[in-house]
Image (spheres, one colour):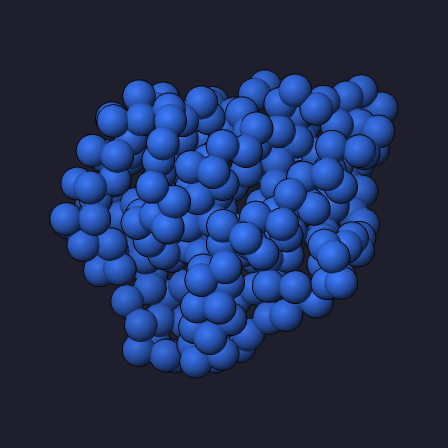
Length: 243
């Protein structure tokens, strides 16, 4: 019988303390593929922690990580935007350091199969994991679900060896058509193994059950889409290393 164990963990990147939410099935001690989960612009909240537990129930060791530092979160778009903007500006440097600190933490866990580490990101987190693939980090798969941006701060100088998956709503106004086209051109030029799936009648935040309510509360183009959520979940599980 599956027994999902969760732990709040802390780890360091230079002088910054980072906080993670670790989840795994404790009913057996076998090594298993691992997944780093990067939060939306709201920070590491209940949503990404619940996603970590869902991946754990599928047989992975999963950790919802902290890309803002000190466990910072936001409850308003203004605060979330400020945190995200600062993080995006330092993605190739501080952001990479924060991400690699989480990688190291998970790789050292006794249950981790170190040959099959992947990363999944939602909204801001999708932008992060795409950038980590461009930076050449050793990841089996990166998956970006309704990423905040497909643009890069890291012009590619070599091929991308990581499998890249992007799930995006056709009606997501945060990603204009020229950015979508540029992304596909970039991936083709990098000879990447990638899939770019666009869902019809789907807006930003389509995997987040609270997205519709938040969109109405803050007058933002956010909406949950059950069909797109379920398809992206099933498709991603088929592409990840199998436990």
